[in-house]
Length: 101
Image (cartoon, rainbow, N blue to C red; front, side, top):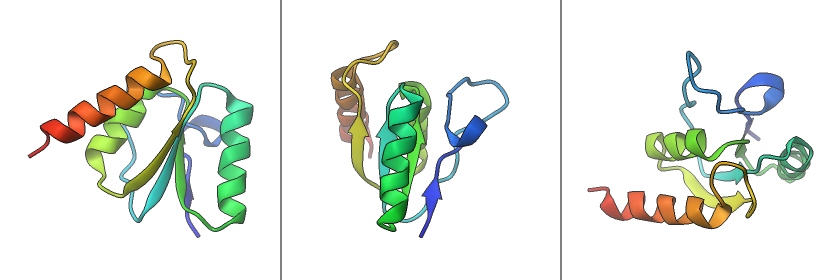
């Protein structure tokens, strides 16, 4: 079992700076939600089921992680986030994947 939840207190705040997006390996579920309790609860559920996941509290570092990994198979995202909505995040992910060679 592998649960990757990078960053402070086990969650990626996506604050930028010195911390870069992690290298992600294996088939993963990605959680993108600005609510810490929700993100931790979902990560715990996946861990109990032995489903590897990674979690981000901001969309920008999640997109960076997606660019660095081809292992993400499922993305769960909040719809209402402060910087970018879940729908905008999904469109950004789809556009980046379609533009990839």
